[in-house]
Image (tube, rainbow, N blue to C red):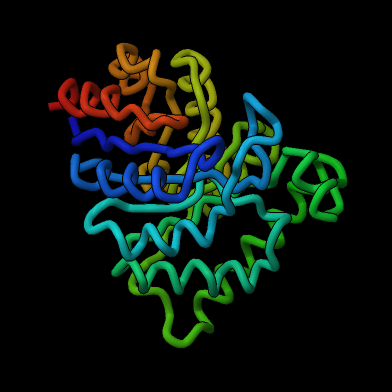
Amino acid sequence: MPRIKIGVQLHPQATTVAALREAWRACDALGVDSIWLWDHFYPLYGDPDAAHFECYTLLAAMAVETQQAELGALVTCNSYRNPDLLADMARTIDHLSDGRFVLGIGSGWFERDYTEYGYEFGTAGSRLADLERSLVRIMQRFDRLQPQPAGHLPVLVGGSGEKVTLRLVAQYADAWNTFGPPLQFKQKNAILDDWCARLARDPRQIERTVGIRADEVSDWEAYVDAGAEHLILMIGAPFDLSPVETLLALRG
């Protein structure tokens, strides 16, 4: 069996920049395969007015303060940045990290972000259509940038919609992220394989990642059996990394 990758998503809410920096340096020192943030402007749980920090400026700092882990947003909201600009930002962070950046992206869903920052919320369908147009533009911009990304800059698409999102994964992505429980992940994984067959895409070209909670660490083998290749542990402040250490030890 191929080596399972272990990642961590640090929630940039109800915390400080100093605590985030300490956490991502500690994760990197533990030897995790990836470190992620999320791309929102307000907390997703707890106190809705708690401290919160912007994703991409943090990722640039993470890129220069870590050494070996892949890094990215799980996931970038497509609506918040012009796609050509986003490609340029991703390329720049990729160079800052010596080629470790992954462009995680999704169609967006958190209405408060849109309302408070003046973006058009639209509908789920319109946001997915925007995402597809943006994926094409992002990949075209990668080819035009000087310099180009440090190497092949992977694109991860997040989501589980069976009719559109998983088609976009099969058509454009190097990796896919969704959530559990394991049975649901297995079902969505099979649907992604079906989309790959329809589009003549080798399903082995798409890394299967899944976000798990600390209380799901004991289920890690069930996720692997369901097809997960990369387990990403989601952690909020105060960033207790003991579940990460447990998962790394279980993997061996």
